[in-house]
Length: 75
Image (cartoon, rainbow, N blue to C red; front, side, top):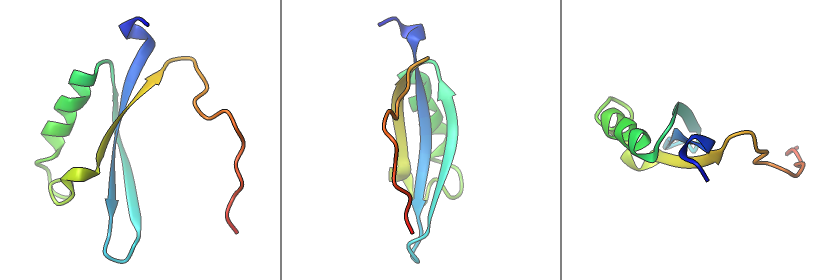
């Protein structure tokens, strides 16, 4: 797989004391290194620094379905 065939999605999940969750899409990067640098930069910012373990970096192949099944919504 060529490098240009993939991107890296950085998100941050913060779970509050009341159980509520907030997920933020940080950005989409061309390399894992660039994604990691974004995490390093933002982990010092208010909100992010209080939940440094909330960052995820996920690799996605471009032009490919990543959720291929339906879903059942909650009631």
